[in-house]
Image (tube, rainbow, N blue to C red):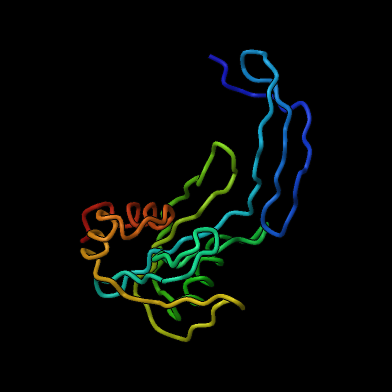
Amino acid sequence: MNFIEKTLNSQTVYEGKIIKVLKDDVEVADGHKSFREVVKHSGGVVVLAIKENKILFVKQFRYPMKKVLLELPAGKLEYGEDPFIAAQRELQEETGYCANKWTDLGYVYTSPGYSDEKLYLYKAEDLYFTHCHPDEGEILQSIEIKTDDALKMINNGEINDAKTLCAFMRGLNGNEQ
């Protein structure tokens, strides 16, 4: 079975610093014509930072949700930026910690039905504190939560951020609690 769709024409509807929105005219696999709205995204990183059987989280107001969320440290990539360097930067900016041991946990596609955003997941261990310096306009609070308490919070719906759930699952493999 052929699943490939062919782009016939592409129009940029919006272009910002980290996203571009396209409207593409396509020929779908069965030969019919259709269109796709696509969000091109620079991508991001997520860090599962473990300190003495505790996970470092950040509380941050998320404007699109209009509420404070509990998330793992994370951030956007500049186009072409090395994800590992970005992960190191985001951990230090948001929590004040750096790590001596890093594990690459792969990546996930956030919403492949309409976006090409790719999030790179990392585990950071053997942490040491330096200082926090969040981005301008970024107000957040770093907190430590025991691994088993974090899992309970995920299971009871207190933590709903998808990137956090993905990194948590990949980083702990369900057996490091």
